[in-house]
Image (tube, rainbow, N blue to C red):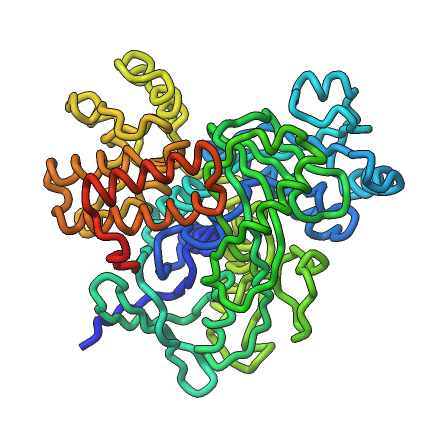
Length: 540
């Protein structure tokens, strides 16, 4: 017999948009549950540049998206400071691009209120020495870098602290519909197989690229373009600021600094399956060739992995755009009562990571209207609780990189980490040397009813995100987990296989030079020394 849960609003999708909707509902006092088929931020929200857009990229072609992006850029910097690095950004014009576009772009930015400033080339080359010395003009904009992982986790954690619930690894297998009204969803636990009925007044479809499938279960036709983009990660951070190519948005024209690495991309290919995270070597090589226009030394830099994810682009027409580039990045908020005659069901899609909070605001405004509530949104002012560093982090004997990271810790687990470091010497042990992740950080992500999943730990701590891609820290984390009794040997064997499968997939497409050697070393350690049987992954 299925379990039954009652609530007011059900949010489907644990990416940035769903997280923002859950928090906005909780802030306004509306009872809500979020369901996510895998981990928080597993989909599109962690498969992107991590760019906090200034809006300048869209100023010429999509004025509304540009305005929204700039406004939300300012709000996010103020309300979620722990997940944002205010790097600033540059737009650089290379000789082969259209001269006339530059002035058109400057005027478009001025029109929508995005501050741009012409930078002397001498200063630009001094600040960013890897820039192509043939660049003809450079402009600064207020771009930034977002830690997508901490943002989603912290926003959901804040919602939960206000009374909301979040069920990860719960896949929606059906939508409960009575005549012309949706009244809930049926979810299945991907680990246990247990099914649960969740009933509510309103179901919000915030499933991103999976939104069309979700709508189909409710008997609704929804046309989404799944525009898959490929990105690559360089093993060091060579740029201080975001570097954009000054032209109409295209492939391979952005370099975003992120922690200790730089993320480069992206491409745009329409795919049918939102679960298509495939990687193609030729696509990567074409992307690198295009990127040389901005960074001539790109081929000499080491790539440690590649990854891909789909942008959910909405358009009413069933005739898809060839590339997805000309489809608006604006917000699509659909009331299916008005659109399709189905009450109790809404879809929020499109937009950008940068505009997730505004997307949530407009969605919950509609919820309040349907529930005859007049409570206003305050997420543009209320700060997601972040950690102010105590003197302890200045005094404790830790590696400098680890100390710096915790000093600026944004997560809600910082107090627990600090307490562990004070009381337990072993918890100071650095498990991941590349990213200086301690056992205390790993342990803070584990819950009593959770599963030991290295991918989930990685998204919360950056374990295995450095040049070795988890070659050494994965088995260290697994060994300590067994030693401390937080996981069994069978559980960590599954976790190792699952994590290494994903790491090797991203490494394989860039595997030349040092990265090829790293992949061979990973195989030697896990398949030869540890005798893990590759192919036994039990993917959830």
